[in-house]
Length: 141
Image (cartoon, rainbow, N blue to C red):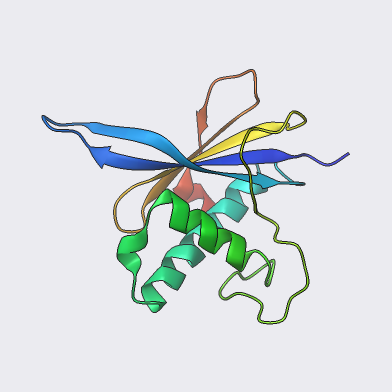
């Protein structure tokens, strides 16, 4: 059985008077390999590639949940190991798929909190547990 997961993508805004506020802006579904140790690395890889894609397209300021989710879907039809550009003639189903709700059969929920200029935080949990923050520096090694 596959380890299914949903990925919540949150936007962050500065609040008048200080601090930040976040809200859910997009939701994705991934049919397999949603467990920690794999999905954290995959999200890190795809988020970095997404920001590079937006920069190359001349729109790095479009670092928001809806556009990030759209580019992740686009890039996930291409090379699984090196998501750098969409497949031009791919008849494959994207690995990241849009979702309107949390699926009933997921093992993990991932949360990506978008920060300024391509920065982000990643968290995960099982549906009945609390969030655990991913060490992004550890993913670089």
